[in-house]
Length: 612
Image 1 (cartoon, rainbow, N blue to C red):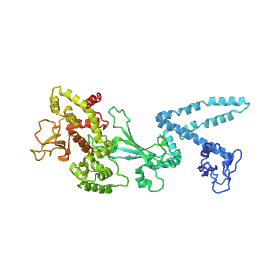
Image 2: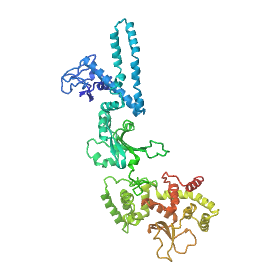
Image 3: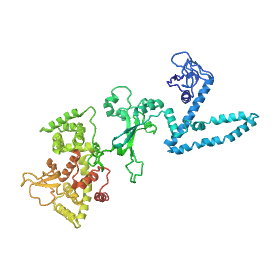
Image 4: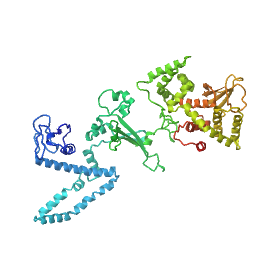
């Protein structure tokens, strides 16, 4: 390798044309004073002195002629070297043209082969070329015989790179020969095909050889070693995050590590509205060097393909029409379904399952005390949030509510239910629920009364609710909230008979809730005279036949806590009240899961928002 003779430059190469390009690009404005002392100069060239062992005397045209023992390069050799390099470069440019036609312009192999007819046109123009050369020679009073003229014409014809490279039997004459030439002359990494079960295949482009070629032929390696600007408490790049600092592989030693960013994309190659949709859909995985500056990571030539296969190949063997007993194609993929923000987070930095389990035991011990330290419970519940979500969602999603609350008894505390809801959604449960409910209650009651003025079972049920509401001597905000929530499932034509239960504590020693999966239990001290209890003794939340919370004063408090428990324990909404809870989630709480509202919910939402 020959090192650049200019001071403060570490560039080195063994290709003459590359050095010329570097010299003109980097040292175009430099003078002889910028050269090393052992480098001699003259008016036309810059040579490397034979003295000193720090600069090697290597032939800049490697492989074109033996010159390792020569101290200087003769002008004649330089000219020959330039011509050979020009010839090679022109061939590569022509090969690049064919490659771009097929890869970028999507020209078919047959159409590309037809371009060879241009060579035939050039051969047929030989008489015209001969005549033009003859006229030029006569113009300059140069007389040559026909043999010399034919020789000149033949040399001109043979010097045409396109004709010579695409002639029959030449390197670029056919698609197969062009492919072989590109594999030899270009840094090509060949993909591998892997056969997946059920006859499907996937094509993989090795990532490590691609990185090696990328570093060898581009300046990507220099870019990732550039000094990165980092400011305390500022997230400038992925290197500033806590996860990469916790990763021993990426941060333990000062050795160079190359983290990658992976992208997954699916593309439909057939008519998405036709009968072949999803059959030929392709799955592609791309990667990019994460340490590249952000301004380079979005460049197309930096994003590399790693894997390509059909989507049906990934889902093969899963549940389908032909395999109804197999597992779902998307099983074991946990995704938020109700607009959860922190659905399944990672463990905190420096913590693992065993350390978090010890903290869980501390939570159980602290909750069991008569004098609970609520601040300590809050801190421990915050730290063990990731472990709790992992156990609820991933490890044992079918675990009963009773067993789950035995492991996490703090979820029986109202403040912790609200705190857990905030951890999941980043929304304050109490303030958001009460504020939005109070804003919509006047309009909700008006809509209910309009419906009650009609005929039918729904109107009759609404009239019975408002009959009890109108008989109240003093109507406060809690009564209005109760009327709005109690009439909501009735207005939406849903069966709430199993959800709302009443327990007369004077006549019955135990409530009838053994078969109640999700519901609200209203406790009264006398026989209820109306379907709605505006001033109950207490209201309890029942989950899977177990009373979870039993000291709630009003129906709005019960709905609020029940919504928090459903998010905290990942419980599905009751099927018979699906519209009621979707209204509370999407309209009241504003937790939009980007799924369209049903027509009845959309009509109610439009009635509310049109008058608010």
